[in-house]
Length: 143
Image 1 (cartoon, rainbow, N blue to C red):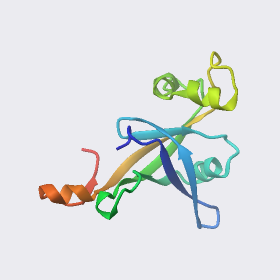
Image 2: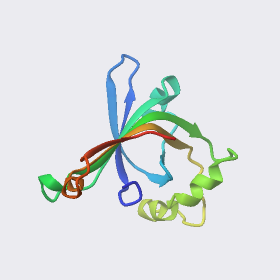
Image 3: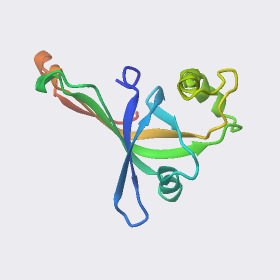
Image 4: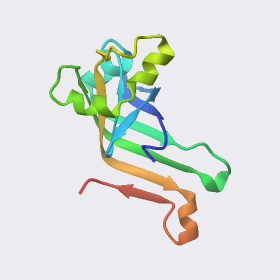
């Protein structure tokens, strides 16, 4: 699911406790998803104050029975470009296409920080699973 989609809605907690949901283009490594975000953005400020996050990823519907998506519940952390772990994430991030879309040089790697979401629980929904006798909603947790 994570590798076949590229858009998620990220929900953070505003200072007054209300939710803030923002669409982002993400990439994935294993069960982590990550995206770029300016440090001054509201979602980044919210996550520095409270690292709890929820992300929703879904496939386009072609009918009610085709409903498929994942909700990630976990924590987020931001790493700067010079962080020792950054290169591993940037290798999985197809930034060249993003630069081409924005008219930026594709030979200059981005300097943006990455926000990495680590899921502590994933609620996966796929209604086609019923046809094979499985529950359409499954909760996954790390081992």
